[in-house]
Length: 89
Image (cartoon, rainbow, N blue to C red):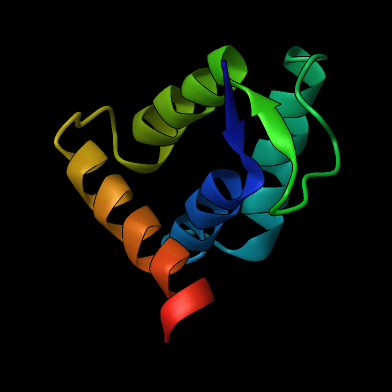
């Protein structure tokens, strides 16, 4: 299974509300280094492998939200809002 790049970009946009750009770039670079099957360049139209994408979300929860699984609600809501603004607002 795969997920579209828009979901990835929505997660990065949410991280930008919590972290400085340098920290986001370091986080992504470290994740990509440890997950060689995850693309280094992701466009909104890209297809990403589901497994590594879910690992990315787990790491975001762990590092940006101190492991609070309730943050998945915020992540999902933010992602949905961001995705809708691309097309409808």
